[in-house]
Length: 199
Image 1 (cartoon, rainbow, N blue to C red):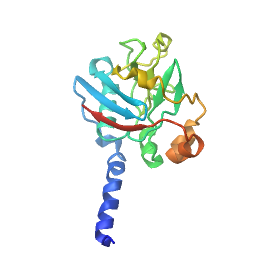
Image 2 (image 1 turned 120 degrees about the vertical axis):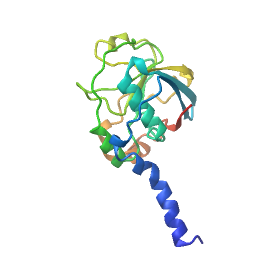
Image 3 (image 1 turned 60 degrees about the horizontal axis):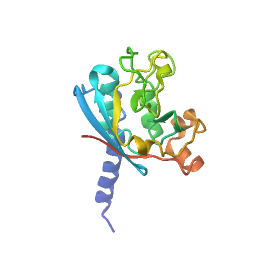
């Protein structure tokens, strides 16, 4: 049996990633001008190549979230085959609650929402937070709605096309309040990000 002190140390380590994510103001590192992020899922891997000049605020936010493990374990909670694959609500409700208030200012759309391009979702002015979507086809109508892509899927777009199509069935407010406990209970076949890393 492990000594109590050792068990406490393991518990502290398990909480470390969540604790690091509890203060969005501390995760504000400027991203490189170009970088890649690799995502691992049960359906395969995909790689997003980011160009900071397309959306500096979006690129910086994405860089910090990936680098600090925010997307690890996130469910693909909105997937429409032939439209978009969306994810980015943290499985820990306490973490997500902090980031809901850490919104980004709007930026101009410099690249069109074509197949494979990636952008943050928004629900009104200056409301981008943590959720991102990948265009599974050309969705240029989103340009006029003010969704600026910050990156492009340069590897693995096929894997995204095979994600479980859940449409809009998962309730986003319930995900925010209950996290992955709600998703795993109500949508047992949902796909998740296993791991995301900066390359």
